[in-house]
Length: 360
Image: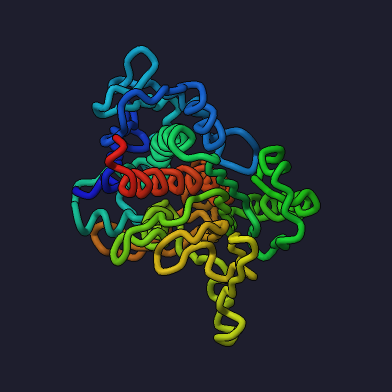
């Protein structure tokens, strides 16, 4: 299996499986002499860790991260920075009865057809457990961005839709996002989402979600045309997250409803200060940041592991039924929020280093 790495000048490689002894990652290309705050990195991991509410998986992992290399006397040395998190709450017996069956919606079938020998416990390498290490790498890149970009880039992200129930942009309260278990920017939607998730969980099913990301203070000029455009790199990063099935920037697919006059972000200048009259492009023009807020949304499909019975086939290609027991997120999109933030931070850090590599 190849392609376990992400990035260009700044790069991380993850390793490990859901029910293995540990998961980890190695970050390469990180500049020297950057103060590293392990408590800050842990705080970002705490936003993603499981078992924090009845609306996520009940697997209890503390996700305490350790740095094994690349940091000395509290600062980066310029050599690879290695992270490790030991798994502590695996329950592999939940998968014993279905190890010879393919779970619909999961990567079991494709992994088996491609590799034959694969870890069926919790999805093994294809499990979203891997994303914990993306959050660690993303937090490290956030530390770098805070050091080299002024004013500081600020990334906020929130769930804006679960199932059929969605919020509207005029009800976005950024201060509320971290004060509820859904990463919701809207207090009035909470009760509706609670009832909906618990209803689908009780009947043995799950729900999908749409997440919006907003990036403020990104400098003009980030992105490398033609094949390392900012939006294409962000798309690659977000689409690599487990269960993500689509992404759009700015007005996205709604642009088809506008004509060419209204779809373009018109501009004006006053006292040499540039203003955009709209942001249909989502802050990116020609693959390069325009200085406007970068805005994009991505959709996370409903969790495929559900208690309701499904039709499938076995490894010997016989028709059978499957019912997935165990501890699974009734809406995996909730915990995808900090993962999306992490990947956004990493892409920006990587591309900004490419713009300013001579400084390091």
